[in-house]
Amino acid sequence: MGKVSLFIYVTIALLLLLLLSKSPNKPHSNRRHRRLKVRSSFNFRPAHHEPVPFDPLVADIERRREDRQWEKQYIEHAHHELSHNHDAAPGEEAQPEWEDFMNAEDYLNDEEKFNVTDRLVLLFPKIDVNPADGYINEDELTDWNMQQAERDVMHRTQREMETHDKNKDGFVSFAEYEPPTWVRNSDNNSFGYDMGWWKEEHFNASDADGDGLLNLTEFNDFLHPADTKNPKLILWLSKEEVRERDSDRDGKVNFKEFFHGLFDLVRNYDDEGHNSSHPSDDTMDAPARQLFGQLDKDGDGYLSDVELLPIIGKLHPSERYYAKQQADYIISQADTDKDGRLTLLEMIENPYVFYSAIFTDEDDDDYIYHDEFR
Image (tube, rainbow, N blue to C red; front, side, top):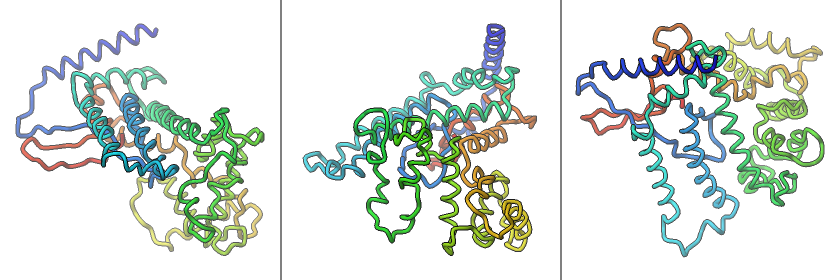
């Protein structure tokens, strides 16, 4: 069965490539050039969730690039004295990194080395698996995006693990863990200092087996609690929400504290970010009170950490949530016949939905950046 499916895919791919090669070229004046880009920035605390690259090969290139930037920033943050080597010539460290960056982009834009159509033909059967019917549906694309996201997340976790595991025993103790730089450089009165994301309570909640050490899986949960299955850590997330939203410091969340913050997050999650309207407080008051009443199981007019558990996944969206968003976007852009799924031909005809690009006119030197999902 597997050989038959492979033969069908190869046959379809060859026919599509033949049709595309025979199709008439567009007039020279209407042709647009697209240059594939590698993400060039890395931040210890990203301001928003970054979509994962669609193509594992591009993801690997970006991970290598990110590793170089991470090493440089880690030295600057954790070993400040090493980042000011006055014996080195100015820009000596940055130059090879920039050359590597440009070499990577040159590789991606060399059609003989990296042909987007060939890549899509190769990747299509890897995504079309459940069922392998010649179409990619939302679930299949979400699963594919999820696989890429998990690989990215675990790569970063392993990198962090190597940094914090001082005695190289494969575990991280709380004594070995160093709080983020912004914590080390602040005092007790600084904004956000009392939030528990770097404190021992968070560490202990991540320690699923209670041995006082975090293995790789537990450390990954520690860094990315939104994706955990650990009930202790999920409860810690709820407690942290109460701490952050409890403006009157009574240890609970009243309706006002719930309405201004938590309810918006729940509503945005349910809308999946597609609703750009901004309804007034009066319009949202009734549904907010309805949800508040559903969560307030003991009817005391307040929400405890346990009562917040049913919505904690909406307050802290998981990687699967973002993987589905990315899949929905890709299908909305490439699904030309609007049947809710993708064929190989639709992917080949819309390749730059799957790869970020810079568009330039042949007769225009101005670049227009399209911030597409990757």
